[in-house]
Image 1: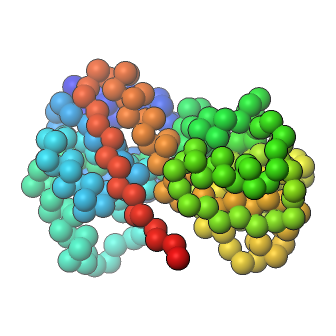
Image 2 (image 1 turned 30 degrees about the horizontal axis):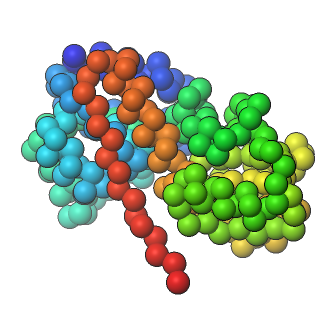
Length: 246
């Protein structure tokens, strides 16, 4: 299958128009080698390890969540040059699907909600809301840690949890938490919890389950979706940053 036939499928899965305005010029085909695709790799980030692994398995296309090129480039660092050289040398095109896949049906936030066992899930523009059987806050936090296989940080005065909002990635922002508060959410699960948010939203249980663990399941699920839709052998590459805690 040619690259552009695969791209058509990717755009059906996560329409580019869903992306946030800041993202629209960054998503899509970050590296276009106009090649035939016989093997696809999927990962959260186009790291050195991921690109090397994609080369080892003879992937012709790497699909990632975070754009390969996020900021405007005025100069190329040696580390980025090495990544680019590795992709070019192995004829690997790179496609990113970021905030459009966050929002898409079956995307990052839907998979996160499913992994946490949320019921009666409601689709929001900036996440998902659903319900769990009422339980103590610490019980719910342990459930998150086990379900996502990750360490967590949590804070808040809420003692019990039933209504939950999830937002994969860096979602601890005032405008999103205000929405959660308005919808009377008990717990908010996301990543990159900040000091000012902790002070302002003590009325909710705030759970930081790491950026990687809240988004990676969606990319893992994409691997199966993409193989089913294209018939092309597709492999997920897991590159957990393995944050250490003392």
